[in-house]
Length: 172
Image (cartoon, rainbow, N blue to C red):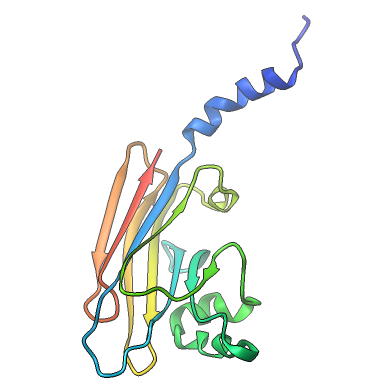
């Protein structure tokens, strides 16, 4: 039997596989606080497996432009993230680190083609968001999720001080 082996044929075979991959969107609210001395919080967003083991960093927002990498030394104030992942990283990391964010809603999205999502096997996960602010507090919000999704699925939780609403959307 003679098989067709062309790039077009290979793309057609791969297309159904790509359609089954999921995308992940995360929205994090940084509340506007009425305090005497306000500093934008450092924020870390990551996924843990059902046993609480770190699986994947999604975002770290911190003051990476400080002179002499001074902003890096305050990353350890994100205590939970720092113990699970941060101390083993050489910041900044192009794939997920960025500047601190002002109060408001902030979104990060990971499309189906993102190779980092390929590392996730099917199962239960927790999206963790940790915020720490100079002359302020520290807070962790956890959102249980199921990966992958057979239909568009949303999950949410809310903080009470340093974080507001946290929403996760998974689309097949």
